[in-house]
Image (cartoon, rainbow, N blue to C red):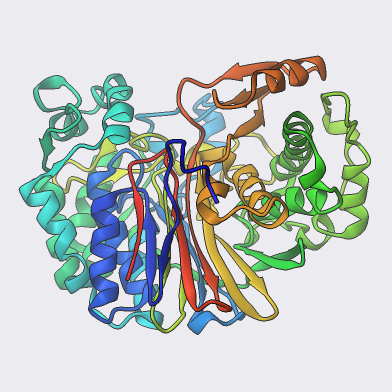
Length: 527
């Protein structure tokens, strides 16, 4: 339990159903769906649609979606891969002939893969929903049409994206009224997006991937030199996939398989499972997670790609022998600087958690990757297109090299915790590359350090990446000094790292325990 003398928030305890999202308006919509008898999947789709409006820099229907579902709380986890593919004309040789060696961070049409979110939403609803897409989109339509107040974290992030939004005329007109980011507390509307939502409410999946909406997206991309075709959009399809799993602290942790980086989270957790994390000092704990992160991410970057086109050795990556070899590389007193030759060789997102009255749990994540994705807005539809293709490489022979109809390596990963054949918690941590480390940090807090879901999300965060250890400002002063003594180069982050949501299913007491990250504007709600 948190210290009630200090600022903070308590977890939400609910007897029937609960939802946690990164925005209060989305959480309220999701709760309304649950209270009206909707399923967890219904609530997730309705809440996410609202998030596509009120958190436009983080998510949208121009992005991708992954989900894990535990039907009626069972441990038979179902995984949905709603990530899009590169255009059919995206041959590596084309980029090489053009002298393109790197894909741009924004305003680059070649970073736009065919958005997979709407395909995933409709497939999830067909299998686990009880309400129509048209009904579930109504709150999002209302907020897009009539306006919504810009919340604190959203407004702060929005202000940082003015320059790149200004480069695209459609994005500038829609997202920078009067040439500026909307101020916190003011209202903003997206009438073109509302009109597109109305088409989807009427026509469903086909209203996005065929017809006028698809034609406008393709035309907007082609105008900028993109290789996309109407056929690429018409052929878009989500995929039900077999989740991957690893043991951690007496539980089973489920993740979506590659092309996502869930295997990286499982590798970090498998390393941490070999240590008594609860007994470590704050500095030693941060150091251990940092070293495990470096090792796992190096393997991720080397192997994780689209398994439809590349052999990804998941079983080997998660094998006891491989994890033990990685763990042996960690020096408890010294920060490592690992090189590719050290390893054995084998031949800006929203996240929400929801559990309904029947016990069905969903771990759901929807993203446009960078803040405002590619910053390319489809001119007449108001759809902001993601830049997930930025994860592709333009290097011959790389597992993640761009290729026709190939899915890029994905950072967004939902998680599901299971014990003794029953779902324990849908959970997830946003934050781009950070997400695998975020999963490991959250679960080690929850299962090894005895925290409740809210405490586990609140706890200070760090992330070892690109030769530095990013740290939040809330660690003890002596921790920073101890980490530097171990050789870590610290970067004090101006904004907090990531965000997260979780709902713990406490079957013993017959309640749900939900938490929502204070680093975002959202909240957990239940009834």
